[in-house]
Length: 248
Length: 96
Image 1 (cartoon, rainbow over the protein chains, first blue to last red):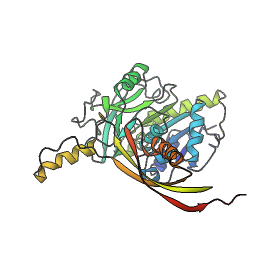
Image 2: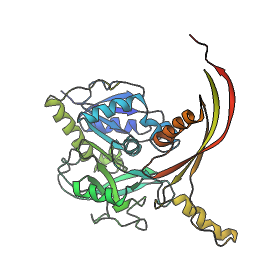
Image 3: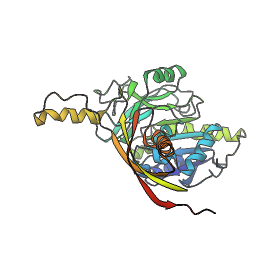
Image 4: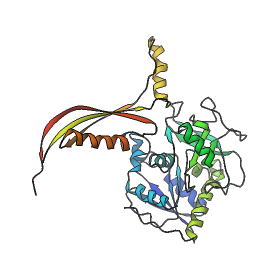
């Protein structure tokens, strides 16, 4: 049986079709979940795609946080359900306090839309364990607010707990520097491109692995991330994880 | 119960120590205007709203909650609440 993965669509989401395509490529069955849904239709995992949910008014991701579907997603995550946020989805997860830190305006102030390289910090997480080896992964970024920020104590804690999932790197795999280094597209602190929660079931990143899943798209380096997420969500469901039906 | 309309402003600004690229860009442009001696520019946002409540304390409690949960992200932003004025409302609830 193919694993069913929810793709949440907010008004203003625009990478949902890419997410649906990536899930197909990874062998999963995407289930589109509208923002006013109160239950998650028994999916094994939830993907929050990129875009500009609710126009990104006030702060990117904050209005989406209060939507009915996010209440269900929060309940799902609290029960150990696997959730992956990409770009705007990552911003939504930080605003919802499901992931630590915040995404600030890019240090260069410009919207950045180009290819970057990232590398996984660890290969033993539910978001990276199908990558096989640590190497630079090429995929696009497209965002105006992607500068990862947390205070120094939180950053130290994230490093100590192994919660840093991805960092921006140079094409040769060496870690990107600060805002003056083009390899760090938004000036993220410690070149952090993605993090996960302490429990390891919720992860997010600013770059777009879902648009780098087939050679015809210019890169298929993102497929390992999507495949890791799908495989681990499937394994959790196969192990008899409870099906969450809304958190109202 | 008769309510009063309280008009508030919530001023949200980046916490001190948090990088503010917008403030830095504004500061960087000052030289083009021939202005000197202006430093520490911070760019925030101001939200004005009206709350109908029995008294100011009740209205303030609503604004506090809004400011902390929605209008600002406490991780990166600080807020200050300012009462702009109050006007007795014609609104009154008919007893059941």
